[in-house]
Image (cartoon, rainbow, N blue to C red; front, side, top):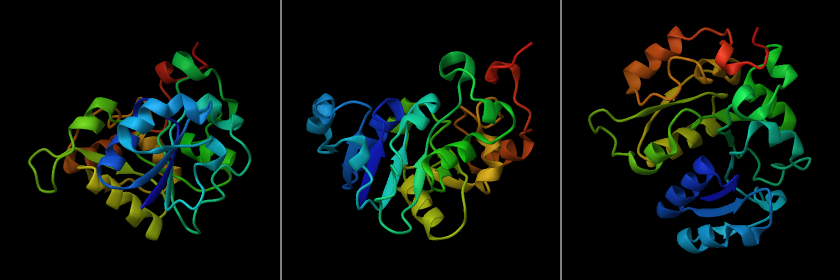
Length: 222
């Protein structure tokens, strides 16, 4: 499968490594020039490209950059992907820690819905709550005891099937977390965020989530 990854930080770089290990053809980009990714490309066999070219003819696109930088992406950043190819976004909104205030999110828009609006394409939210080292090292075969489950929010259909397949191939159980409108259930501050739960515990944690943004994860704290 041809996969374009925009962002080569902890999650983007980890997914580049793992997906190349699994035999996928990966094009990876950051906010700078392809030459700055020469070490990652040499290590993994991925092709370093400009961000504007990462999605070209891709079967899957992964966006993994700081939330505050999403509006800086070129218009139509994922438009050159294959028709119907899903777009994963792994982002989290960290207003106090990194991103500053994003008014639409603070006013109640779901984080991933905001990302989808910015890039002009529907997205699937996954990989946002797992520590990168666990994503790199803790995948296990299907049926293994205590296999980590990852919630996947987004629309049903072939795109979801493909995304679930990638999660499973990486060694994790994929849990349907509902549409993007419900993806607040896996945002920072929710019971599932940052946890290595199995399928049953992940479903319980998603059900227990509440939509209120807690003080730690808001720019508008009293």
